Image (cartoon, rainbow, N blue to C red):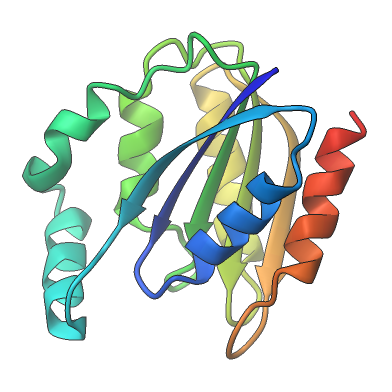
Length: 159
């Protein structure tokens, strides 16, 4: 079965979590669509600010390849900023082709709760006609380890 894991990361927490989940998905052929902010901290903040204001021109061409048609499962991971995912999440959901009817899993990373963000993600995905079959929050104040993410990936394998 083919799986697409798409995620947004600025500091690497969500990337680490997404890769840990993907590393144990032995029943799936995993592809990634990462949105990673790179460079020095100030450069990352400037890019994030552009995204938060709807300017995705730097990565527009990447969105052209975002097509759910060949995948059996879509996994979307986002950090939590002020109880919401970044605007990159809305852009991914909006631009993903053939998303209607797809089985989807959403997860987020958060320093504190992240529950409102996860609820928002689930609602937005379901508005497109995709089906959220599972969700997870990975929380820790400083650095999120991979143990819980791998455990979650193993639960996905058992489906």
